[in-house]
Image (cartoon, rainbow, N blue to C red; front, side):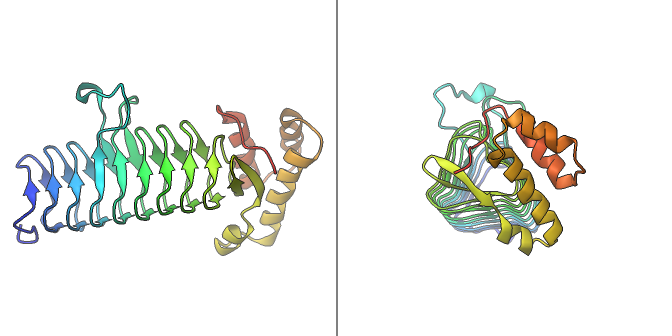
Length: 259
């Protein structure tokens, strides 16, 4: 293991692929597992039991799998942080292990975590998300795929952020944000669909228009949510509209209102 700096502290019971690079003064605790191609820079700490996939970059001062900021935490009931492949964790990122669910905290693949980002215990983050500088997730937050969370965003516990959502900077999220929309404000409100993100992702004009009309029906028709969803179900549906309908039906915390 010639790619491990001599000042790094590696527990003998950690499982580290031979191709992993570990920088000065980093610590890898007992039971951690780190896959091929990972690059761990200086002063990083990988806590006990953390599972990290392949080709992740972990920058200076990041803390992965640390104890949750939860008064009920005990080492006996904690669950690991599990991380997929091809994620990039910038300086000072802090992600807690799980404490109250069997799955623990889960990070998917291809995410970009900007500096000083924090995710609380038992959160689930999907794939290909961008998570802005100094944004914070409370415990049990779920983020789908291809979302963009801007800087200094605060997301309340048990909140669900849908796929391809854009959250504006400094927003306060207290209810679920439905897919393909933009959330902004304190507290946040829905202020339109994420047209730019959808266009960049290759969604054709007719699909973007169908999404826009669906949300117009939900938020601006004068019908209540149940009536609007029932009306949408009776019309021809794309997969995106089905996703929107299911999101509203499955929301437990309630969906953010329109501005």
